[in-house]
Image: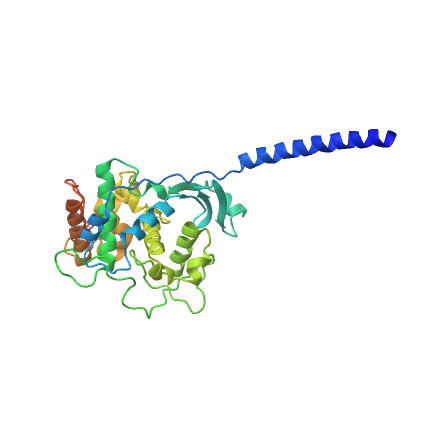
Length: 328
């Protein structure tokens, strides 16, 4: 009889434990249930308009690849902190999951000499690409972005500005484009010549882009050809370049939406908000501070005006020339 009583107690205890366990599992499951991905709204341009802007484009560059790149990269946000002159930490957030990861922290990050001056921190939200401001400003930004990728990838000069997005890489592929970089050293056997809509070049830029896009610098350092063989990656690399400030330069995005403010050095160098400033950021050393007749600069300006008209926008007060702006 005592054995039976003890067994009954044991059964009751076990049943209670199982019930409690079941309740806890159910509660935990509810807490860890996958959240829906936040939508990245992008309705500035239709497929028909895109095809009309780039009628001679390489079939590699498709509207669907562009929109997918905008939406997927738009789910990424990265906080960039700089210590001293060039000691960096990147904290990358995937907004679809809320997961935050430190994808780069330089070896000198915790050195005393690196901590002497205050950190410089800024956040790049790739979901702000052509969506952060009013409709007119967003269209101006899109026209400016398209103007520069059209210029970088055109094949010949036909005078009608319909020949953008024709090249997937620069014509001279014999150059290695190696630069000194402790964080992003070149991989043996790989070359880092210009690829994709913005002609991404140099190992440092490939590694930096890969950290931001993928959260892993090795992906593009090991396989730079992804920027010319995967159209979504190609457009992501171009958007990354457009949205991400460089060490001494603002982002083209911040310039086009009026977010960038001149400092004393910029004013002394003649750098003024407007499309011309974007040219200075992208290729100032070659095209800026040389007067108003530089072919590359004029080509970008003509593409910009052409795309503005096609998108039903205007920029009447455009500071389009960088002819008197000093390069960085």
